[in-house]
Length: 422
Image (cartoon, rainbow, N blue to C red):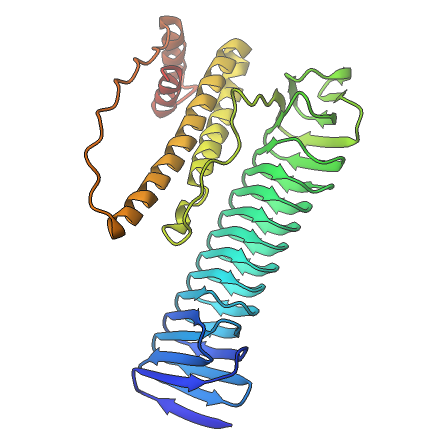
């Protein structure tokens, strides 16, 4: 084994095709990329190298950039700043990252603690995370196992199970092939495209919004807030619901209703869904002609990973806020007034989601064109926007009366008036 202390800017170290590269400590930014060479290219101002035939170990007091063989495996013990890893086909281990971590196009990943945000995309294998103190965004991996996330978590394209122990922020899961399990969520949970046979949300302190259908099997969802279930009317369902108030807008058969409970079914197959809420439970028909929940377009991860799921987050946050507000309105002014507001806000939220995704895709296309094409000719002017439907005088008076009586704040009144005029 040879030990070298380097103060130079760059050096090339010969290796085999699949070396194990260990970063014992990096006290500034760490960037690791891959290439087809059987050598490691090291760039840094103050680092130490220990090398033998099969393993290369580095310690750096400054920023470190590595270009490694594509078949390499990485073991990173301590990184005191940002970490970026791209294109490493071997296993990646990251024990401790003091700031943000971004991992793209790698083999299986095992992470200890990340004290900033975590972004992971195109992981060829399982992704295991113990703790993330910021937000977590995952796209395309095998099994997903998460111990604790202290911010929001959004995951899409999980090709196995998604097992989440605790998430302090919002949870958004889309397109999960295996079973979903969340033991404890402290805010809202939004679920779409679940393909497992036994999905379980043991506790969500906020609302749960679930879009079916689900596979035949036993599925259970518990919330401290409201539960909204969207279900296609042509899909089988056996539902058991228990909550403070239940609203059923599905064509269920063999319905048994009691105070705060409902049992019913559509079809004969064994898709059993259990809903338990301390708030309301709303069962709604999911109609493809009116509510297009399918994903449209793809985001470029390298363009802006934070934009991943932005439209969905806008949608869910708007609906979650108004859902809680209209619950109070219904008690005071009746279901018709509350229902009208809810329908308008749901439509506005869908438009906001689509607009956000369109804007992001357009920005991506514009960025790519700017690299290789001359500027496009000016576009034809857009047609005039149809006039908004204004709230009726009766609706305006009701809202103003609520402000006068201290039931809602002026800001909440503005939100309601704006929703009614969309």
